[in-house]
Image 1 (cartoon, rainbow, N blue to C red):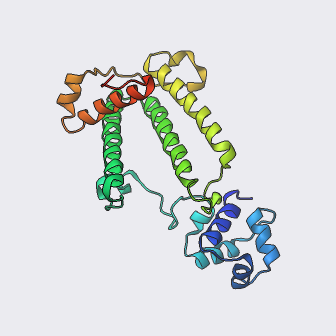
Image 2 (tube, rainbow, N blue to C red):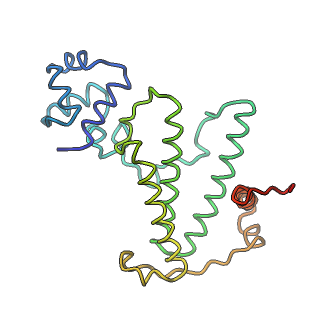
Length: 237
């Protein structure tokens, strides 16, 4: 049985504020059967998957969890949008300024980080760092999700009671693996398998400023702000 289908059809129904009775009637099945489908008790046929996809105007790939996009698109590198393509979705006023400042600080710093990672020419190091960052965004997104108790929990396949702990453990593993790879100790960890040789990358403030004249200031400010948070000290102290 596909584990995503029950969760996604329940999510779609709740997002559109439809009752099981109404959806069941529209799809020509009993409410009890729809309830079984949504709970994963019964498995439906392919014809019903297609009917549900048409009903909610989504793709079968989305219903089956093969694509996170409702249209079923599987993005390639070339198709991924860049932040500059986004509209002006941020709030105005002081809140908007805080959002824009932090977004630029983080996105510019990540640009530098990944460019430096590329210079290491080590796929495993890049993957470990990428997974760590993806999980950190995932965790914070789930926190923002909590601001409205009517938001559908079925957006996620991992329960909220488990997500933070699981993510924390996975991030610790990623950080440990990345540290081992970067320091040349990965060969002593069988679980990492064959690891590419890591090209050394020279980093200092002068080189950063020369190589990234537009973004170095963001990274250096991120480092300063982060270490003030870690130590509880500010430049005024």
